[in-house]
Image (cartoon, rainbow, N blue to C red):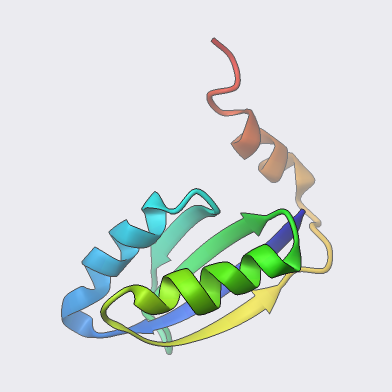
Length: 93
């Protein structure tokens, strides 16, 4: 499993629309609007690097309003309990 943090610069008037569109993508586990240099942060989990490349360079590029992205690929997770708890949500029932 590949985990990535994608930092996005978005046209101000499109922040909400882009955030909602990103949140609908199955690979995107969380989207945050943030203060600072970037407008949105998306947490992504994909099977392999090629899936990440397809997401960023094929599907995300189609979203109107994204001006720039910076993708950070995680090497290790140090708070596994948080990840496990997140994936366990909705697993019962």
